[in-house]
Length: 87
Image (cartoon, rainbow, N blue to C red; front, side, top):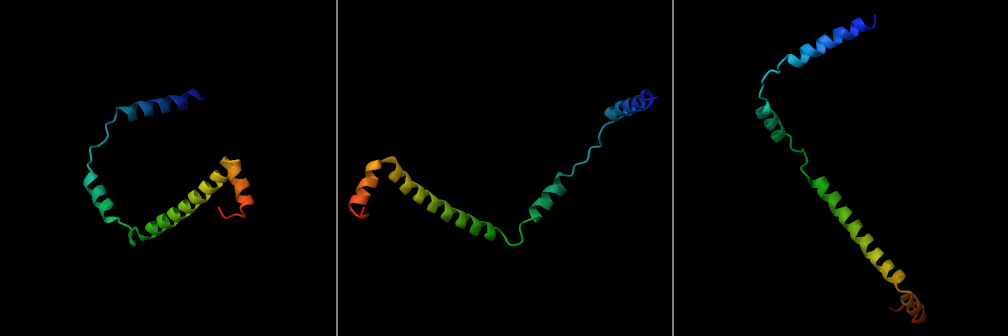
C-alpha cells in the first residue's frame, strides 16, 4: 500500500526535473524598483545613531586606557596615593 504513493511521487519528481523553466527576464523591473526604494527620511537617523555610538565608544576607550595604565603598573597606584592623587 505504501509503495504505490511513493511510486507516484517518484514519477512526479522525474517529470518535474525534466521540465524546463520558462525564460523570463525581470532584471529591469527589479532594478527599477530597487532604485525607487530610497528611505523616506534619508539616512539622517542612522547618522545620529552612528555619532552616538562613536561618542560612547570613545568614552569607553578612554576609560579603559586609564584603567589599564593603573592596573598594568602597581607603582602608579602607590605614587597616586602618596602624592594625594595629583598625578
